[in-house]
Amino acid sequence: MNDLLQQLGIADENHGAHDGNHWLETPGGAELVSVNPTTGEPIATVIQADEATYDRLMQQAQAGFEKWRLLPAPARGQVIREIGDALREKKQALGQLVSLEMGKIRTEGEGEVQEMIDICDFAVGLSRQLYGLTMHSERPGHRMYEQWHPLGVVGIVTAFNFPVAVWSWNAAIAGVCGDAMIWKPSSKTPLCAIAVQNIIQPIVARHGVEGVFSMIVGRGSSVGEKLVSDRRIPLVSATGSCRMGRRIGSVVGERLGRSLLELGGNNGIIVMEDADPNLVLRAVLFGAVGTAGQRCTSTRRLFLHESLHDEILDRLVAGYGSIKIGDPLDASTLMGPLIDEGAVDDMTAAIKQAKEEGGEILCGGNRIDGKGAFVQPTIIKAHRGMNIVREETFAPILYVFKVRDYDEALEIHNSVDQGLSSALFSTNLITAERWLSAAGSDCGIANVNIGTSGAEIGGAFGGEKDTGGGREAGSDSWKIYMRRQTVTINPTSDLPLAQGVDFGV
Ligand code: NAD
Image (cartoon, rainbow, N blue to C red; front, side, top):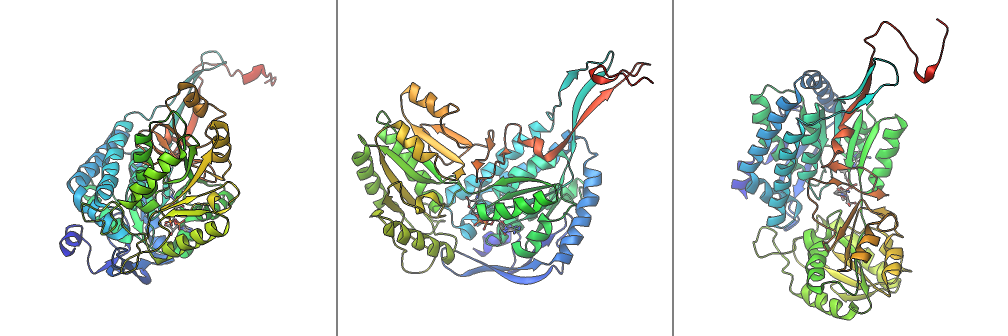
């Protein structure tokens, strides 16, 4: 473990504030201990930042933005390209740190770093494609077009479960768009953030980029609130629970700022009678058990057509029995721990409520005794009258519903408050098209014969309803990180007014 930490520049005690140039010597806040969820033992400590340190970072970020915004976008892309290369070199080490601190298995930890590399590649291409449209003016000889300018200093608030990738989704795109940024990572995974900062620092220093990529570890209720309510931050991109999103959305909305909210999901898979059961099994196992059910896109609800219900359920229960649970860094492990004891308590409470509401536990249902926040992945036979199935419990609980037909499944599927990811398994083209129509899935992500988990960076990622409506990463998500300016140029010696208005002068 020590070798790994050393490679990534993590000491026993670390400073939790970087102003885009240096680590600040006296961040001013309380000490935070980062705990390994596999063993319950401390990994290292971080001195958190206080609000005065936040202000220092903000000043640097504003100064950094003044220069960064004037660099041509392709030159900003070059910096992001080199950040991607540095991440390639450190992929294994950073991926393992993600496993150590967050608890996801090694291949997923490294996969998360691959996602960072992918978004850097995407952003480099984008740096030459920040296109605006041109329009035909109704006024003779006039020219109209729109152009996109950098927005300012962007606040990035991230959740514990993707402790590095979500930063990169924002930072790579905001970076080529010409924004500076302040990242507030989750206090449950501060070391991952410190490692990222250490990886990128030599590159930004080599390019003389200052104050653009800064990071602050601090409590949501102090430093987080300060950032969110700061009028100097035109855009807050926040990933986390719906509760957090409600708070951030209202504070940012109150000051008429922009927010990009990526919040909780309650993702379902509908399995029709003509589905391929082998695909269903693999997709559900990865979706519901992978990352110990701690992905925003984790499969939480499964709707099985009555003709396949018993067969698939029997095979799923058998599959759950063969999942190897343990140290996420061990190559044979398929499920690591939950993030902490609080998450174990939340899972226990949800299972208790499910039982009280008439749910039937088919497998799992308990915590695993011993060191670490380990639990059994759990399948619960559910019915639509249960309240708990409407909530996101960030743990490996799968609620299974028996359905008569597509209409019944869709109706229950769409009846929850969240709207992130969804999937249909069917080989019937007509059912698939109904699912993808305006009257089908109400989620931001709708898949066919692919599970709910594991999006690619090329598509816009995000969800509807209480998931917050934000879109990150691919497609045209870059537009939220820029300000659009509509320009009209009059090269004539006349001053015609639009809509034919005659003002008599
Ligand atoms: P959380 O809401 O507890 O915390 C997320 C972040 O918000 C943390 O950095 C936290 O410190 C910060 N925060 C909390 N209150 C704040 C405030 N008032 N002001 C500023 N910052 C504040 O979430 P979590 O437990 O870290 O992550 C799990 C949740 O995140 C789940 O609900 C999951 O679905 C969601 N998530 C969503 C996506 C997505 O893209 N839709 C991706 C990953 C995780």
